[in-house]
Image 1 (cartoon, rainbow over the protein chains, first blue to last red):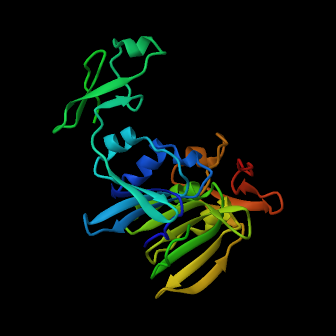
Image 2: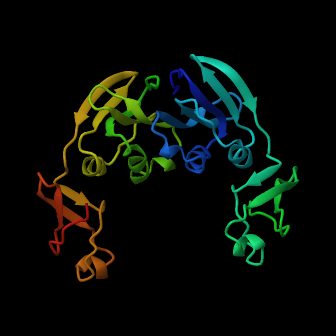
Image 3: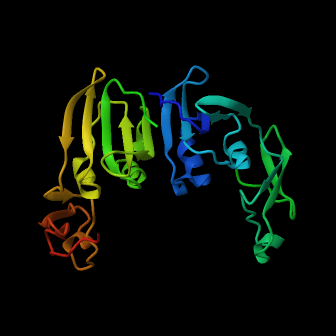
Length: 139
Length: 139
């Protein structure tokens, strides 16, 4: 099952099957007024199954969330019906307000104004640590 | 944005914009292994915007849930790439285990084995009442 190409927008391809709905919610795509499609369990040559999200508007999506949840996705920027730019993404070095520190003694637990910032401390093991208290993020 | 026709499956069309995700969850489509697409805010001639769900497998969907949540939807049954059957649905006369009685004195609150059954008591006002205690369902 494919979707006709969109005129101007973004296609998030090669989403690990099952992650499409998670990304839809984390990226707040439910709040968009434009046409959005999520297709799950699409047959793919690269992996057995994949999910795809197509957004029919020239908006920016949070690459940090995408990279954190599913670093293997491909982003296609569509302009005038053609692929204008293709991006592979990677695990982001820094996550700002994407995940939240659960250590009750961390300064972010008492000071509401402070941003929750995590740094990638081990790329292989995909471990992020809070920049204030070094607490490891849940995976 | 359209989706290429599916070979064998179901297309739920003319979903009121915004109801697509609700139906996806109520119909437990997240549990399906087959390819499923939800497209929201599609331009439609009938209404301004609509949602569409396409299921690429010959499964049965709960017509009572569809009729209760969005009686204006159209069901297209696809076989061998062609529309084999087209169904309009209506408000169901009876709802079994779709909505649940909230009256703490209702027999369904104390007896767990009993099915929650509601009957349509006023079609114009879309009012359903519990068959045991007559309590009106929330809308």
